[in-house]
Structures are given as structure tokens and as C-alpha cells.
Image (cartoon, rainbow, N blue to C red; front, side, top):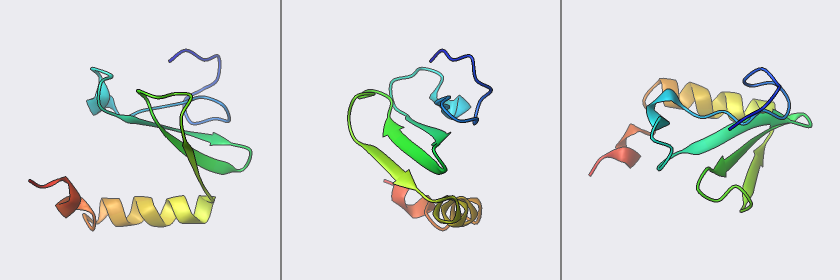
Length: 73
């Protein structure tokens, strides 16, 4: 991931620090007024787009642990 943009600014893909190995992660960026999400292993694949309000609602739910059960075995 190389960019001349600051992380999170329009155009710069970012990923969680836990994804340091780069093999199992998603990347996100702000672009054209929406937040885009993609699979880092398939950078030319599907990109999901969310409004700021949708993304803020997801971040709030994640911070509250509402989706944690999805990562459990």
C-alpha cells in the first residue's frame, strides 16, 4: 500500500494494524464522499461503498461489540 495521501484521506487505502502480515484483511478508504471497503487480496475485485452515516453506525456497533460473535468459532 503506497500513497502520497494521509491515511484515511480521499484515495488512500488503509487497513488495521492487526493485518500486518497482509494475508487476511480488508482495506478501507474515504473516496468521493463515501467509505469504500475491499478485500486486500483482491484489489481489483468488488468494492463495497457506504455513506458516512452507514459507516459511523457500523463503527458504533463494532465498538460496542455487537458483531463480535461473528468472529467466534
